[in-house]
Length: 349
Image 1 (cartoon, rainbow, N blue to C red):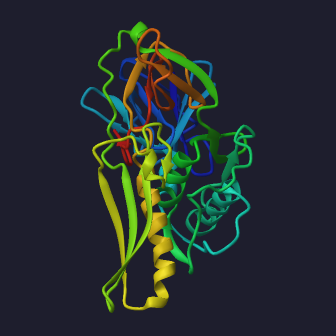
Image 2: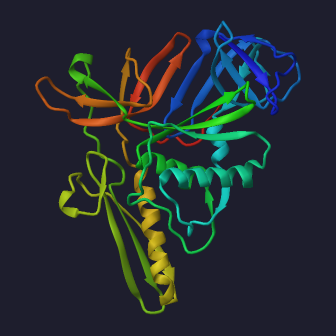
Image 3: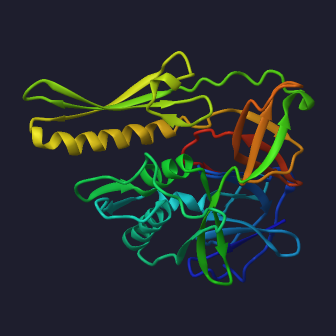
């Protein structure tokens, strides 16, 4: 594999020097609804540059992966340490959104947020495009939907893309189009293709029973002038990772509960504040969806895979889970993480 550096105009730096990667140092973790990790070492590169992008290619020059580049640094062994961060980190910026607008479906909403990010934050500095796979289809709004009375600032990734992707069964990947000279954000449909995984055949017996840190969220509004407290929806996470307001369906115990509390002294504000509290509570609960932890080596999968987990011989499917992480080393796909792990932003040296 080789590494090349590009500036923000997608032109190769220093005659597009191609550095040979030390395969033993190579590690790439791609994540469906979180930020990727990418690190490697390569032969010494002594030119003084500050590239915008780093691109990984195979030995034939075919594109494999692209990321935001840091400044190449030589280590004590005279090897270049590659510093890169996921292109999705670009979305971790504040945008002013008018959520009072009418959106046809989830697709149009996410497209609108991306357009606002592109206009307000990116400001034409890096040509960028959002593509939604045909496999996604038109997704109607469920409980999680945009709602506000006024324009407000939102973190495009944390407040919009991350919770909406997870709740509506989607994932996001990125790529650098060197020919078209742009960055592409791809939204795809998770759990699209079935794959049965028999844990006992893989020697996995201590898989654990998943108990999330938070399995209930509720919003409230307190009118400080009257002392009256208004309750919002009680969002309850179920063991199949769906979310309901029907307490009779609860099947995760013990209850681990958090609340979102809004305060006012004006009764006329209660309704709008309660809508906001409901929305925030539901978004927060999405962080606990699919927080299982099953790692499997030696299988072929991608972010569209739906893992139907069978724990013991003769049993029915225990649970269906999405692909959360794809781990690569110098030889290719090494390990698959089933379920999601919240990791936050990663900057890898």
